[in-house]
Image (cartoon, rainbow, N blue to C red; front, side, top):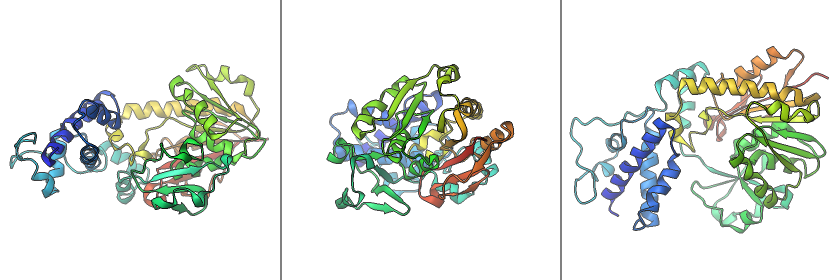
Length: 394
């Protein structure tokens, strides 16, 4: 493929990404994979070049572009090499008219920008949200892996105060490695590892991972507990939860039990755990504003109505979790969002609604925010998170 053909392919994919963002369709990575599945002539270098163009255009545009061409025209006006590919020859896009409108550069839709301001996210913090993310791993202590010896030939970085974390260059592929096959490592952002430490899980504890999904935090908890105790991993999404058990087997995490819950009947299904859990961890569904480095088109999918629904869901999950915590136990609330309405505001409301409960310092990482801590890409070099550790009275 020629550079001009790369640009046209990026325009075609961006059309699909923009439509999917508006209509709730497939994610960008999925659409790129589908596009090339029917174009076998494209080699690995071609696919990589097109992908880079697609994500460069997505990261640059805060508002949803009118279409794929507008997204690429906006990028081309800042890059002469890309502008030169609009030559109209062969498979390349037609030349850019002098008055043709391209997408505008920005961080996020204007309405989200106002919410960032209300949550005291300054422009520098916001800009870092759409930078390219590093590639982080958690070394699995259950398999006896030595972080110092893994991937030494790939320019690995050790992270201070996080001894089981490794940072590799962006774009590194490890799924085919022996270390991955043998369960020595798990892909997990350093920020996710940090907020999981707020559980302060120890051997012998009884722990509930209420929104476990595919189980990344459940596996981290099992390692913290040295595979001694009990972890109940629950979710209402059968597909995601079904991926946990094979992962647990690969990781050697034998204390993880899964339980599929019916939506709106969670409390009934968990009544046998009332007053039993040393820790209930809620990695709650959220806007994902802290993960835009990995999913930059996600900011085009958000709406005020969707955030309101997520806030309601988070509040409901906190209400479900509270009776499960034993007296003196902890409820750890986590969201990968930087919006106060999903983070510090939720913790404050919970404490107001539950007399006697108190907030405890969850972790040393990040910076204080309300009754918890907030991590940001600009300050901490991680995905964005809020975490609070809430203690039930004895």
